[in-house]
Image (cartoon, rainbow, N blue to C red; front, side, top):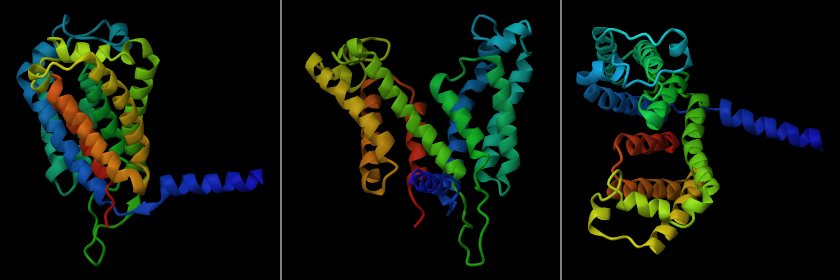
Length: 275
């Protein structure tokens, strides 16, 4: 009995990670990630020296500290960032995007080695997404009938699990901070504080504490639901709607970079099957 259940579990896992499916979702995601990377890095080009070649602005990791926290010349950092933007464009528009993909990864590794705080959470998610996407069959190889040839879904599944884990770990962190989060005071302070709040809707509407408490619990429930519901066909559409509403609410009330919700929302194309 145990061996039979174990065999079924192995077959289910093998099908989940190794099955073949149309590659159009990862083709779409490849182009979106390339465009997102361009919009992420292009505005930083004029400030490359200040960000990466000034010791008081960097957060050097253990490896950099062991090497004496070397400072690269400004021209080198600027050149790498220009190369990164151009390579990301090649991933989007080139007929042979994989060679540009390697250049993107090399540039990101160099920049990450200079500053461990680069881009904070969404910068790290984008970097990991580039690594996982390299395993995906995104070259748009066509069959004789003109359709995109199916390929293994391994990278698509791993990218989806990365996306889901962000919401699950965020929900778990909120639950562990029960004293601050359950009371709604964390949301109330965020909405009314000058650092992140007092923005658009939160500037015009004085959100009461009880509404923040309801929102606190609603946020946790929404994050858990969309992280799990996205994997089931019956709840996938509802999970997508919840995801859009969650990030729309954050964007309309908090001073957060539009890059983060954009990065999370564009992962939804990985869950849209190619009919």
